[in-house]
Image 1: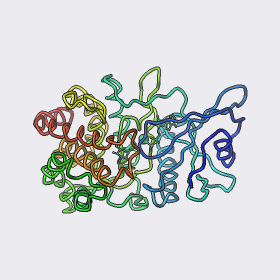
Image 2: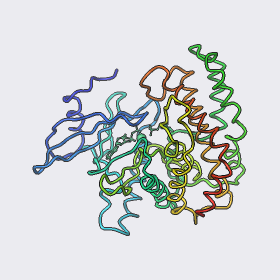
Image 3: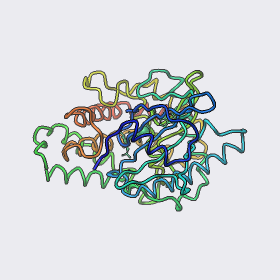
Image 4: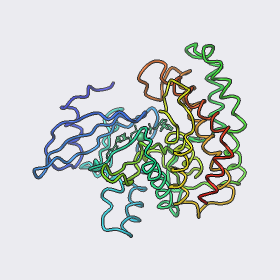
Length: 369
Ligand code: ADP
Ligand code: GN1
Ligand code: MG
């Protein structure tokens, strides 16, 4: 049973965490597709001190305690790395609050809550044409990976098994088509065929990794631009957020998922497909930022598959939207009944455009290596 969200409920949940200050109110932040996020206003020492209170999606994250265990490890590790080079990490890594039991979460029935500091003066972008911001996003995810480069990956919990296993994503897609639970398959035949047509391309890197040709590293695995906080005045990257999916993965998938979201000339859910394309200036800017940070650490196979990672992640994400549409929209939050289909169509159009620009994409990666 979901409880009603109102001031009393939010104040009650905040009361479970060791926060100082007086509760003043909340607002809901809607940019994510998975968790439910509230910005909470607290009054302390004559000033507003804000927090993020988040209800984790336990349909997606079956073992939320393991999610928080990963996040605690990763944020502590990154904090230490940052403090080696500057006096405070306050605005550069998330700070989670503990409960009076010393835990980083409060669980109540099937509700699972966590609370962390709102980073003051920060802003996120769902869609931006500012190339400076896009380059900063590249630096942010590249730097995040460098901070964790020597982290013992085996210690991390696998919070969503096979998250970027595109072979299994294809199996799940085909199963959803065959089951056709809510009889939507016939109406989306062209989209289904479009995604099936990408199978060889989009499963290539997973198979390379299985053969030992691509290394697993600690990666973020959800590198959308709205998972980076930027300074609202200077535009500099502050902190990478949304750490739920930090797990061993492929560097090119972090690069690729970011390109999918940030270098699209349109939004992830643009309905007018004539507006959807890979914007090469945005691609160039992100690549500059990202490769500038991690370029020297890459193996030859990693270098030659960066651009392929972008096609792979675009196909995978679009196919996940379409699979969810066939399942009846159980996974991603939707604002209207066709939302997942619209997202899937947009990703397919983008993947096709990337395929046409593939040589140019590779050339830009090489330019920054
Ligand atoms: P989801 O997993 O649903 O995507 P996120 O953790 O990405 O949730 O949070 C959703 C949004 O809330 C972000 O895109 C960002 O705008 C805002 N946000 C999250 N954490 C912070 C923070 N510490 N400081 C400022 N804004 C934040
Ligand atoms: C979800 O949580 P959010 O909105 O940052 C999803 C990603 C998808 C993305 C598509 C845990 O990310 O994998 O790429 O939506 N997160 C999870 O927008 O499935
Ligand atoms: Mg997010």
